[in-house]
Amino acid sequence: MTVPSDIAIAQAARPRPIADVAAEIGLGPDDILPYGKFKAKITAEAVASRKPSGRLVLVTGINPTPAGEGKSTVTVGLAQAMRRMGQKVVVCIREPSLGPVFGVKGGAAGGGYAQVVPMDEINLHFTGDFHAITSAHNLLSAMVDNHVHHGNALGLDTRRITWPRTIDMNDRSLRSIVVGLGGLNGGPSREDRFVIVPGSEIMAILCLASDLVDLERRLSRIIVGLTRDRRPVTAGEIKASGAMTLLLKDAILPNLVQTLEGGPALVHGGPFGNIAHGCNSLVATRLGLSLGDIVLTEAGFGADLGAEKFFDIKCRFGGLRPEAAVIVATVRALKMHGGVKKDALGTPDVAALERGLTNLEAHVRNIAKFGVPAVVALNRFTSDSDAEVDAVLSAARRWGARAALSDVWAKGGEGGEAVGREVLAILDEGKADFRPLYDAALPIKAKIETIAREIYGADGVDYLPAAEKAIVQCEGMGMGATPVCMAKTQYSFSDDPTKLGRPSGFRLTIRDVYASAGAGFVVALAGDIMTMPGLAKVPAAEAMRVHPDGTIDGLF
Image (cartoon, rainbow, N blue to C red):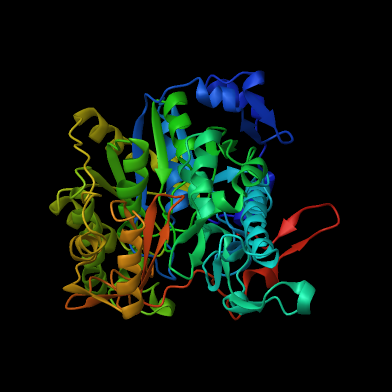
C-alpha cells in the first residue's frame, strides 16, 4: 500500500467547520473565538464554567531513535479509533516548535492518516501562542537590562543575571553571547544566552497555570538573577509581570482543531520533554476532561522523561489521576536499541530485536511504579516480519502489560481499534491506583537520586561543584520542597546518548541545577543536555517551499 506524504494527505483533507467540531463536544458559538474556518480558541468563560469528569489516558513511548516511533501519530490515530468505536474522546497534544520543524524533525502534527489539521498552520504560526511567549519572555529580558541601565535600584549583580533571551529556532550560535556593546547608551556589557522557546520558563508557566490570575502570580515569581549578597530578584520586583500577562492573555486560551476524521483536538502549549516538563497545558487537559468521556494526552520523548514528568509534575500540580498509559514502540526502533544500524533495519533480525526489548521492558516496569496499567502499542511498519511482531507482543504480555498492533499511519482510525479495545478494557477493569514516584517534600538530592535509581536504573548520582552549590542555593530560596524537572538526553536511560537499550553499571552526572520558581520546580541538568539546539547538517528547511497557489512542500 502506497501512502502519500503527510502534507499531501493533510492538503487533500476536507475539514469540518470548526463550529461543528465544537458543537460535537458541547461548545456553542459564544464559547469559541474562530481563527479562520478550521481552528479556534476557547473562551476563558467556557473554560471556567466546566468541571473535569472524564478519564485520562497518557500516551508515551520508548527512548526515541532515528528509526522513528510515531508517538504523536499513535495518539491522534487512537483518538480517531476510539471515536469510531462510539467513545466521546478528546485528544490533547502539544503545539510544535518551529525549531524542530525546520531542523531535523519536520512537522509534528501526527503522520499518515493520523494527523491533526490544518497541519501546515499548526506546524507554523498557528494561533500565535509561541510568538506571545517569545514576546513576554524577551520583554522581561529587556526590562532587566533597562533596570540595570537606569541605576539598578535592586542591586542586581550583572555577573549573576540568570534570565536569558529566547527565540523559537534552533541556533547554536546563540548559546553563549555578549550583549551591551553599544557604549554608554547600549547598556552594561555582560554575558548572556538564548534558550529555545519550548525551554523557556514562561512556556512551563503557561502550561501549568490554571487561569490569568495564577499566570500573573507565577510570572511574578520568576527569578531573574541575584544580588551581590546572593538575594534572588524576581520579575515582580522588576514590575514586569503585569505586562507579561497582558501579552499572554490570549495564549493561555486552549486551541481547538480536529483530526483528519473530524474529531476534536486541543493543541496547546509546547514545552520540550528533554529540557522542560514535556506536556500540553493543564488548562487544555482539564478542559478536555470536562468535554469528553476520555482524554488522550501525550508526553514528550520516552517514558523516562515525558511520562515521569507528566506523573510527577503535571499530575501532581493539576490533581490529575491517569487511569491508563499507552507505550508506543516499533520493531525498527527496538532493533536499533539492539545494535542494528539504521540502513539495516529493513532486514528481519529477531535476535537484535530481543536484545532491544530490554528498553521496552524497562519502560513497562517503570509505568507500573506509578500505579498505572499499560498497553504496548506496536506501531507497525511494512518491513516488520511476523516473527518480530509476535516477539514484541508476546514479551509485553509476559511483563504484565496488554499489547496490540497499531496501523494508524496507513489506515487512520480503523488501524487503531485493536489498541483502543485494550485501553477500554483497562478502563473497564478500573484497577489504576495512581501515585507519584516521590514525596515533593524530600530534599532535592533525594528526589534526583530516586528518579535516577528507580526510572533510569543508575547506580548513583555524581554532582559537579556548580550543581552542589546550586542545590544549596535553591533550598535556601525555599525551592527545596518542589518537584524536580530532569533535563537529560532523550536517547538513553543514562546521560550518555550512545548507551542504547537498557544500560547498567552507570552513574548519572548532574552538572547544574536551577530554580524555575514561577513554574514551581527545580531543573537538574544531566550530562551535556543543551537548552538551545542546533540545526542538522541538512536541515529540513532546505526541502521546504511554497507554491504560487499557496500549497506547501517539505513539511512531513
